[in-house]
Amino acid sequence: MTFTDVVRAEHFPTHIHWQWRDTFALCIIPLIFLNGYLLESMFGSSVNTAIGDTVFRGILFIIVCTLYKTMLIEHWQKYKQAFWRSNLLVIVGAVMLQMIISLARSVLPVGTVEPNQNQLDPSQIAFVSLIIISLGPLFTALLEDIIFRYTLLQNLFVKPWLWRVVLVLMNSVLFGLIHYHNFDGNLVATVSFMAAGLFLNLIYLWTRNIWHVLLIHFVNNAVLSLGAVIVLEILQTLAAV
Image (cartoon, rainbow, N blue to C red; front, side, top):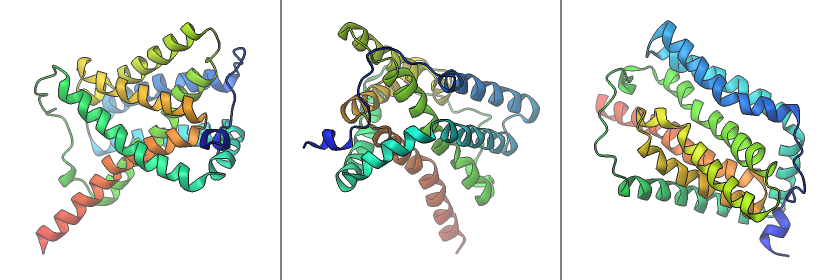
C-alpha cells in the first residue's frame, strides 16, 4: 500500500453534506474580526487586547475540537498508521510552506511596508504575557485548517472537475485575503498567503487527512510566534548578564 492509501481518512464526497457545525465554522473568522475590533475599541493596541484575542481564539479552539472530535480522532488514527512518514511530511511541509511564502513575497511588487506606530514592542511586555499572546497563532492554525481544508474544501469537493479546480483556487484566494491585517491592509501582499493556502490545500487533497496540514501549519506558526518569544527572552537574558 502507498503512503496515501495508509493515511487517507476520507473519500471525496459524491454530494455536499452540510451540518450545523459547518455553519458555525464559517462564523469563526467574522467572530475573530469582531472580537478584535471590540477589544481594540475598548483597550486600544495594548497587551490586554492581545491577550483577550488569544483567549477568545482559545475558546473557539475548544468548541471546534468538541464539534469535530469524531473526525479529528478518526483522522489521527490513520495518521498514526504511518507515524514516522507522516512526521517527516510535516517537517518537510513546514519548511516548504515558509519557503513558498518567502518566495512569493520576494516577487510581489509590495515595496517597503511602513511599521505600524501602534504595534506593541515585545521587549516591553512581560514574558508570561508574551507566551500567552504567542498561543493565538497556534489556536488559529487549527481553526483555519478546519474552516478552509475541511469545511470549505473536503465538504464541497464534489464533481465535476472544473468545479473542483475553481473551488481549490477560490479557497486559496479567500485564505490569503483574510490575512490582510497581517500586512497592514496591503492586499497585494496577501498573495503570499494565497500561495500558502494553495500549498496546504494540495497537501490535504493528496493525503485527505487533516492532521498533516494542521501540523504543518502549527509548526510554521509555532516557530514564528512561540519560537520568536523564546529567542527574544534568551537574548534579553544574555544582554542583562
